Image (cartoon, rainbow, N blue to C red; front, top):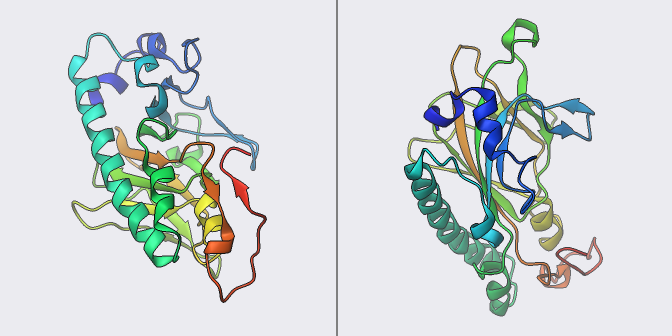
Length: 239
């Protein structure tokens, strides 16, 4: 990752999200290219995206063959972990076991992974700009693996206080997305969170796996709990 993100911007743009006509959800996204629609501000981070549903259309730096190999190995491992998480969710929410197939078919889900690179932006006040502004994730859940030891993610608590999401060494952070909040009938909440740039020079990395099922997956809140009133309509992912 260091080798890629330390390249000149024009070289990184050769594998850019914006230049790849085959699949607009892969490749490099430069600093301040993404806009937080909720806050209407530019995001201060760089990203390299891959999309699982169209692996053959992902773009890669041609001078770094190991980058592709290792990233795909990591992504496949995270999808395996995601299957275990789905099993736990289905059991805890008393959902029909048959739903597991909808959520975990690797050839049909639209999960994606990204390496996020956080660097203090030169135009930010005191070099302390936030990287990814406060938001909730539109997914079942996200798995975040800190590739560097500095703290990055902050989560807003129920009493509207921000606190660091500290994860022990060799552990990952799993955050609930809005799809899972819907499925669980609000028993599991999608937290408001943000990612901060480091206060020092150099790069700070995280790897995020965003797990979303295929479009026909039933997000049926009738199965969430027999003891609570259903708070959402029964819908399918993608509708």
